[in-house]
Amino acid sequence: MARFNPKTGNFSGMVGNAVLVDHPRFGSILRTKPNRKYTLNEKQSLQVSKMAVVHRFLEPLKAFLNATNYEPSSRAYPYQQAVGRVLKAVDEATLTVQEEKAAVVSGSLAQPLDACVAMSDGKAEIRWTDNSSATSSNATDRLLVLFYDEQKMLVHWDLTESCRSDESCIAAVSEMRKGNYLVDVAFVERGERRASGSALAGMVEIS
Image (tube, rainbow, N blue to C red; front, side, top):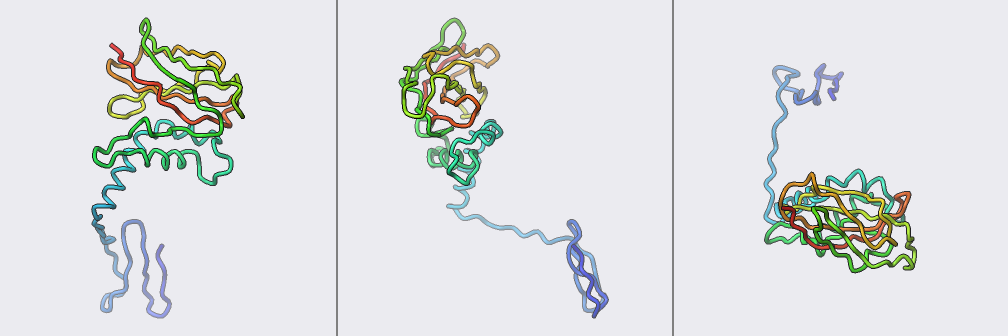
């Protein structure tokens, strides 16, 4: 924003990428804004790289996470909470997310118990043990299924109609490319107000 100095009759300030400055001989002159380059140290560079990995891992779920109030007592948005959790699971040596340590979603509902996944007739079959009697959980909690590829990119997710008490779910994978996929699962309350912590169900190979 440009400012006028009534004493000198000059303008100063910034307009877009241009800067108005007072010159002792020529009055107000316009010049481009100087580019200041900041050099990150090793620790800062590592943190930037880790954050990039985390956001790539979580970005496809951002709208879904922020629309769901997983932790009502927290002042942070659910997506911000998820970033903090997954950041702790990034291996600094390889800059990859360790899925077995990464809680994609987290909340007060009971986690899927004994979750496992296997391919059957071209479909991914997910099984778990019914724990609908667990504290704060409901038999009607829906299963959230997440498929991550070998590059730790989320390629498919689905909030299914399968309930906690069903003990199994079939996930269609016909549109997914061939390869190995890690499957992460969690339960989400109907109305999408609460969720369980996510659990790694295993890996499937789509051929």
